[in-house]
Image 1 (cartoon, rainbow, N blue to C red):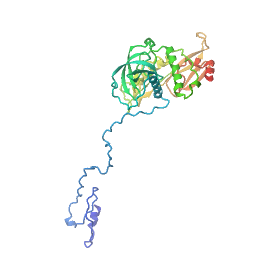
Image 2 (cartoon, rainbow, N blue to C red):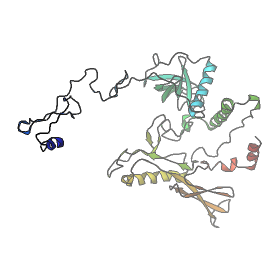
Image 3 (cartoon, helix red, strand yellow):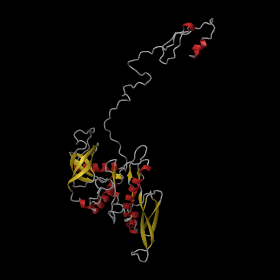
Image 4 (cartoon, rainbow, N blue to C red):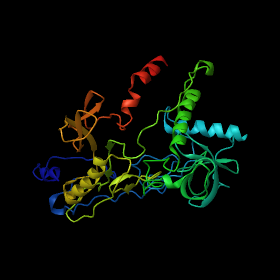
Length: 392
């Protein structure tokens, strides 16, 4: 438009010539000069007709690949590499061992779920082996099934959750026929068989120690890459004086909204530990394996979250850590030692906690790892055991 008005002030004797107008999609076409008295209303030339083969010429051709706005076809199942040293590698070693014992071999054909029990269907399984991961292993129609909260000899009703190329994962439902080693009267927690924290409460403690010994032995056999003749023998597992009320650190947690944080009046979320095999928090009001002071701490922590929920911008992990203080014993107080131990529940990860082993005092950050079963520390730290460990 600026060029148009500049032309109005040129002398009439000046002759100007312009190229023939050419249509353009960018609307920057040139026009021929016309005297002002007959100047028509300007209009852009019409755009060229669209090309049916490519309606959007400015976009790159997809060369046969699916358009971005269309859902891509799911690729066939591919086996992900197993992480070295992870639980999946340990589980695969036990699955291979069980299949070898039963005379089974891994199929060489591409994996397909055809012919397998549908997902979320119920199935009856007989447990053959207890894996190092703590799950029972069963065989059905030549396929291995992983069943939590089960032990060899159990006949279990389980729910099929998913299938993998090497095994199927299930969820524990009920015991149809118990193993001779199962004793459900030993279970001391109402959340057992749902919470992922404990696995062997139904198993006598002597059997638990025997299983832990086998876990160490299988670790040497499967992952040491040493000549079996060079491997040392694995001794008996040292038992704990306490089977409940021993754990000195608990970290319950809760999930929160992705954006915006909690608002005043929002319901209190589930606070506890993960559901076995699921990415969901199980609401835990009490944990019997925790020490007495931590069991009180859980109740206090839950109350604090409920009253101050609106201050949390997202979910959080709560620290509950036992700390011990020793003071001189008074003459009127009964006891075999010169001191009295007082317990405290620490919730600040940057605070210091104190633990005693005999006459030795250990101070650690509350958020750091320290032996979570202090009832067994005097035994495992005895001079006799240290000499044996050093010798091995």
